[in-house]
Length: 77
Image (cartoon, rainbow, N blue to C red; front, side):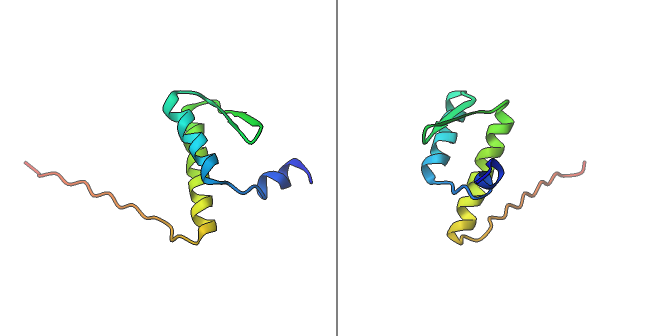
């Protein structure tokens, strides 16, 4: 199996998500999980990884896609 196939077929776990969240909370950019270490270039990359893992876990569990609606109002003077 080549590297691309391995990445595509990777199954994320809640433990992997927790490791990413702990790295973000501690200010680290390196995450070690199941003997593998990944260093993210920025906080934005780490947040993107967290979002990807959350979405993948939700999709695999059959959970409906979460939707967020933000409403901003102001009074005209």
